[in-house]
Length: 533
Image (cartoon, rainbow, N blue to C red; front, side, top):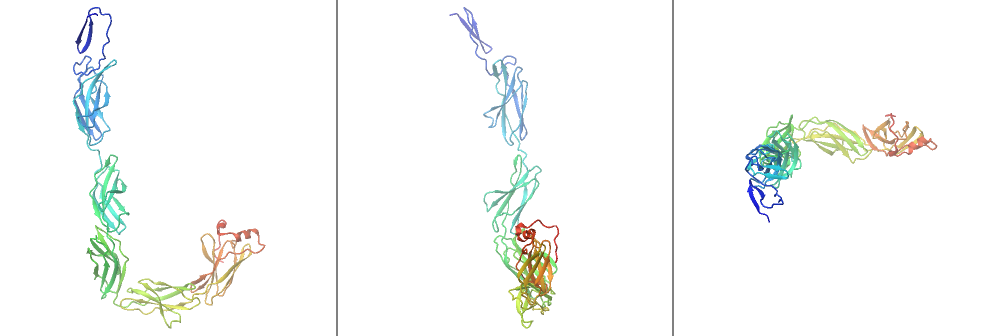
């Protein structure tokens, strides 16, 4: 076996064949890390690694290139701190001394190491890593949190939520609600620059509802605003008012709330519109209004208040502050509204009535009974359940807490009996004869009405008393439904039944078709229709 001498030079294995060397041994692959020699096969490590967070999403990395023979540099990054693990972020070319790492997350730490590498053929050698350098990105540009949240219950059907918009870059706001200390839930999302919301689906009267507001944009959410809470108060009930001595009104009500911070009393009347006349503390149930003018009518409402808002109010109570009886009404006028009812009107001549009493007489005014009672300023009435063909008279009396007026003038009418047995017999293609039974001895006359099938109902004839027939001459006579009604004193009896005209025997096919059409088979609307007899 030949003698072999081996020696190490410059970190490489050199094989010397001194005696009888007749073959060569392969060299091992040269993949290694080194930190010396700038011009040999080894490559020096970079140094002076420096990182600067230039924005919430970018960090600039720089280093010193200590080698003149590198093929390039590798930048490695850790998101778990200086102890790693580090992963390859990017490979750069020779002479590179900086890199900008983008797409980062705000308020996060990133650490970096850099090493040089040299590629020779199929061999790649690396320097040692540079020292580690870390930086933390600043917070992303989230919108500023809203402030000044204020919630107000309004009239027991909504809670108003308002806030101050402190941001110029929000995409919108999220309104969150918590009920009685429960979890926060999103109840509304607004667009940018909107600073109010009305919550119509709040939990209900007497329940605690808290609200906060969060601004948001594409980077995330602001911190939540401060919290504001309210409890919509239940409305008072049983409001009543009593005049006192012609110069004051005593009000009483039932307090139904355990959360109100007070009550407000509102008044209208005496020539003035609605206004708040008193603000009272919680648990109040009485109030005396001593700022009224005698012989005037007033209306009052009372609301429970809470956090600048209020409950709904009960129905307004009306109070007449009177020192004298009211003036008598005038111009009573009555007309039949059917064969068994009467409608009446009069002129209200008084400013201090509490209401009106309508009286009826069926013996020409010899005796009277109450037919209806109305409230202040109501100057009409209906009286039903009367007997047809029975004369009836009416008068009206105003009253207040002091006394009654004189009766108004009397007016009389007689509800007429309705016509019956209405028929419509076709004579030819455009003519039909109507006939009916006259059942009244009191009517002023009759009116003939038609329903044209297109939503219109109107009279086509006004006739004298005792009339029992009417001839229709109209190109659409077979399309109408006919009705007859008796008239009296500007009013009406009950209506007859409705009927179509029946075409005569032997009439043309066109008239026969028209007479047999159902309402759904009505032909196209004619361009012109007559509106009278």
